[in-house]
Image (cartoon, rainbow, N blue to C red):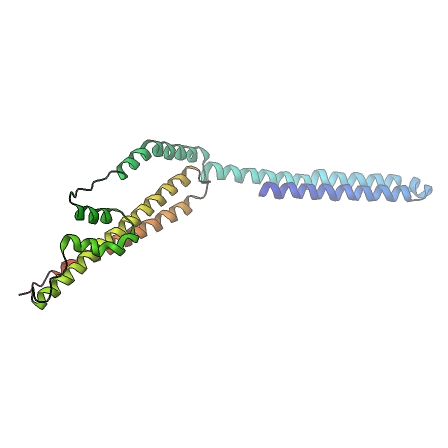
Length: 243
């Protein structure tokens, strides 16, 4: 930006000088012959003075401005945003991604489902799917494995109430894990995006990437707090056992 401003200033000054010389030349041509002869020396002296001012006084100032701009750019490139260190950091990030991205993808794609029977398989698949949209059928899948609350004539009311709340809290915790798994996948995608941006990041953009990483960390902490709250609720419900 500074180089553009300096170039624009040079062009404007050169343009003003050329216009002034052109005006004097036209006035000299249109003047009477006697005036031309009488004032030719003065006009040439004036032109010489203007030219000298443009080349020496103004030109010297412009040269100093260009020197200052050059020193500022050098300071930015060597101290604030050193190009060598930035290039090394980019190379390190690129090499790290090339080495570990494939391995991390393989780890994430490992399936550790262990249920063998039909109903438990369906419930486990819904639990590990990491898709919040599957929660509409989750209660039915849960009841197929753990059975529904007994009928009124099969257990006392307090027992049925405790069974119902225990199932409700269990499903609440399990649903929270599904949402957490989905959020984890989104966070992993965001982390991968931040890594890619860091490889091609422009000098001076590190604070922006750092801010995005900090926000991601806060989201992760909030999700962990939700998981802990669900666990505490479930444990609190176990503190009283029906007689």
